[in-house]
Length: 201
Ligand SMILES: N[C@@H](CCC(=O)N[C@@H](CS)C(=O)NCC(=O)O)C(=O)O
Image (tube, rainbow, N blue to C red; front, side, top):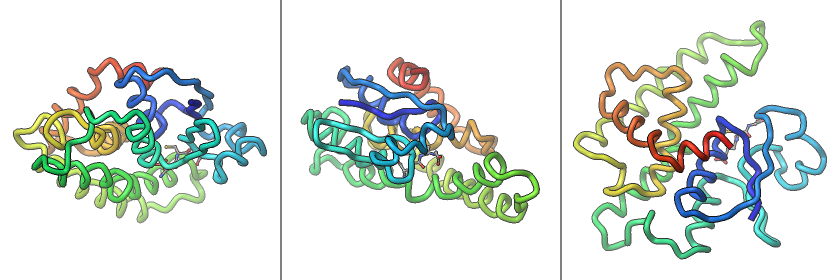
């Protein structure tokens, strides 16, 4: 299995899973935003030249959540997925998908408008709107995390997704001053050795 990876990207989610499960993998590292990510060879693998991508024999798959589900299914590893009968199952599904559905869209706008675009093409009103939206999305996670250690009972793949998105939001400067549950949650996640390994490949 080969993971196309860049630090400080959603590829960390996949590496984090592989490290948690002690699965061996090959890795191709990029610098995020480098021109190698847009090389013709890589564009054949990922049509937008983004990470993560996973290759597994004839299988090529991109979308971090889909890759995580693929790996969990391939290794039949249920330790990171509550069963359907478990009362946490619906939380698991909701928070697994919340990362890409709700947190990352405003984060993408903030990254584009404050980092990627040259200053003369940035639009302040977009940043303000996205920052407000991101804050609302994070308030919902903070409220859910009241009296909880993880999003769906014990540590699960939902934490790989939305937990990682929360960590990225914090690093991007999202306001955590009124979100005490998220601060302890971030500390709990980032002290995991699998997370630390996956972040620093
Ligand atoms: N929804 C996709 C998003 C993939 C994506 O946008 N990845 C970013 C890094 S987090 C990327 O590769 N950006 C580089 C670029 O756009 O050049 C996923 O979850 O895998």
